[in-house]
Image (cartoon, rainbow, N blue to C red; front, side):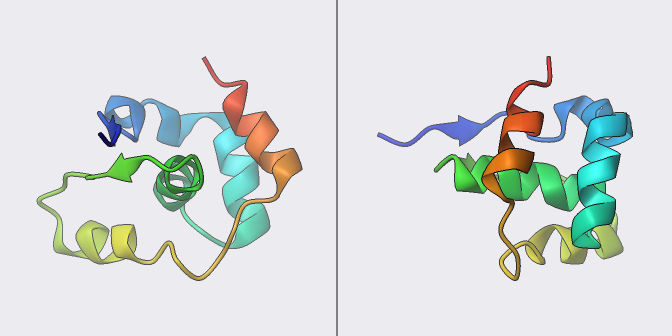
Length: 79
């Protein structure tokens, strides 16, 4: 059995979070990419949805970085 990330971007709300934005800047990634990577590092199956071709491509570019343990803890603390 695998756990799937339902709304891994928090229905869009989490991409506007200041902590997520700070982590995204640190890794030179978008907030959406950071949230997707966070879920992947937790072993979750992630199926992000978008009808925007550029966002679909961006959502796949999450395998060239890892989030540090410290930054994972910051993201884990989000509500």
